[in-house]
Image (cartoon, rainbow, N blue to C red):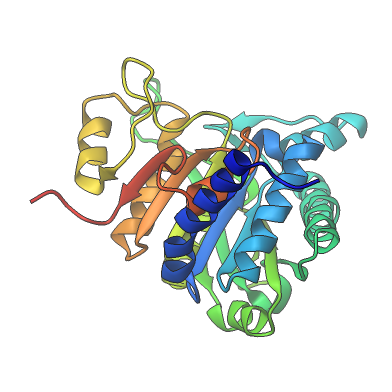
Length: 301
């Protein structure tokens, strides 16, 4: 069925609006953290995969990092393994780490790879252990207590932080025309396996790859002001001010710190976008309006 004149003009407008962004980002690396509701909604999962395939097709280099908290929690519950959290981080003993590695490195990772491949892309799934892509070290949590003169150091098990990333491994994948899909599992110097926050891994990857964009998909519209309106077009200086005055607080702080660290280290821009919107990545990358909250590494004059 042919398009009428109005529909044809709309299609033409979309394509011409996308052209300068395709030209600008050709050959550039874009790191996308895939998580939240989009991971468990089949239609959103599929639209995300098609967005990534299109980015690769027009000459960009997308790198996908994924989480999997709900899937891990679900399997732990089925196995009757109790879970506790400290400051938002899952306490990960050896038994829990086995489940984390199975879910992230096996189930979730391969689902994303399959979805991208089914939509015409060429994806390859890896964990940070493959080729020692992500070298990690144990993360310790310090908590202050009124009953203690000194802070209490809490052992939360196999939870790690990024120590080093081997960009050669990633570059081999990108140069071979594959789309890397990375599970946030790292390996320690002694061979120990560590569960690492996916936002942190995405931010560190964006830094070492000097990415053009870091995109963090979440379950909210973006960073909100005190009136509930989405903030965008922000500099790192502006974000620092909003943290200082308490506008940015709670669960959004870790994502914001990942974004700030990335742009302060040379990533051109970071974006916190609503993964509940179909084709959110496409809308952010190829349209003038964009999506969610944009943070740039330009400082106010």
